[in-house]
Image 1 (cartoon, rainbow, N blue to C red):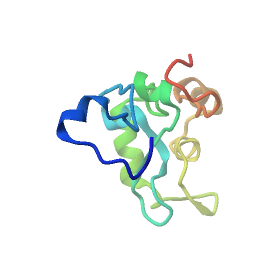
Image 2 (image 1 turned 45 degrees about the vertical axis):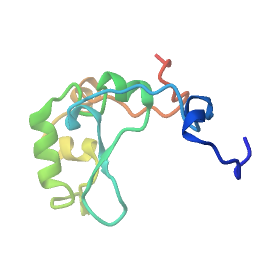
Image 3 (image 1 turned 180 degrees about the horizontal axis):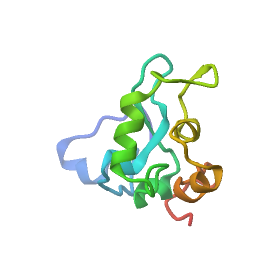
Length: 120
């Protein structure tokens, strides 16, 4: 397609789209949230980026639930544990007295490879 091509209203159906194959979804924020901030200098809640997990609501808090999500993000970066600010879920759960085994069974690990909606 030429960038300088001019189309009339009658040609609307024939204009090639720059995007296609939309898939709409809705998930509650806690189901697709990450344990990292969305930007580098604030405590904005970040989201997971693995498309298949986004569509399934399979974020790091998916097994823990909304209460843990709320508690974690209300305290994000405000608690010191082992001489550093807590900015990851595993450290926060350790601070709350959870064992590594419990943590491993109750958080969804971040996935980044493949990253298509068809990945399982």
